[in-house]
Length: 520
Image (cartoon, rainbow, N blue to C red; front, side, top):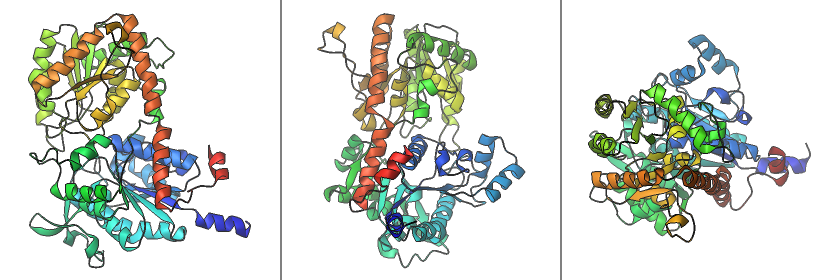
């Protein structure tokens, strides 16, 4: 290698994504990639899409996440010996798994004692993984942390060492980790960079507030939610921690906030849907394909088999603090009785170990006479649900971004939700030329009030649209599918993040033109 090429190589800036979950990773990150996937929500898709896009464009991309041994084994159908052999014989290359008996048997990063898991995760990043990656790149590293678990002492230590940090908020939850759990970390050295708090009667670190405080730039996955925080919305509810709101306002006031909307990964498109009974794209007979998937979904879930049913699909967790599941529970039975051509499918788990709403939804389904189904989350059934649905809906009190509307639109369904946060950003009211509009536009239906009347109103408007002729529906559905692909192209999201990374590296490109072209 010539000295000129060596100089260029050494000047390259690496990006380290730190996240508690990920979707499927690209092979370009090394042979371990195909065994790692611990996705629980939309963040996992963003991580896998970013890893794939950056790697393809020649950027040196690393990922640090928890080694959820039992979860990874189950998803790959591997026994203990097989998994042990993989971990100890395959070079992880750009994937850095944090190992610990504290979380190796957990189903996801937030199960079990999440404070213990987070402290262990953060300690290992600060003491081992980050120093090693920075040294290999002669100090040229950008840290991209995701949510509270990747914040805390990680971002405080990065600030101390002048390592640039981009922090993305996928949600605004925080956690207060007692300082005494960080044995082995010199917390005194980073004390000035910590957001100190009290938690469980102990001196603690507010992880999300610390991350926002120390990040050079803070990214939101939707513009409306950032505005809601800055404008003191939800001040009457314990939704946004005061510490988080305070630090966000500081960043906003000094111009250090950015917004990049999440984009669904390409493997989420219906033409690639491995769990569909019939795959389809924009050029296909979408209504016929969705009808076939609907019948299969009805058979699997115990719904009455009716290929003409208007299926409303709820694919979110059963979370009364954010998602509004209690509003659906209050109206579901009455709604399907009033609208005889409607069915409702709910696929999602309760929050943490709380099974209350799983039991309520189960009872509602049992007494519905095959008009309502409730199933715990499984990816194959969930993706089939998107292909079966006429409308994908929710009733969110607040929403940083949300992704169910995007996926629903990609699959040829309308989207219905409350006019807040990410849904305000992405759902636009349907307006048709046949009703006197100047052009066909919109992709769904919004309602204002967070109550049963609001949800009923939104769903009723969706019913009216889906009772129109197949010709009208097919034309609008294909338009929505096409516009969604353009508006939420993963490449646009990757472009946005690369622009921010380059802003953090003083305008220097992360990969040379030759490498970028060669990698594409």
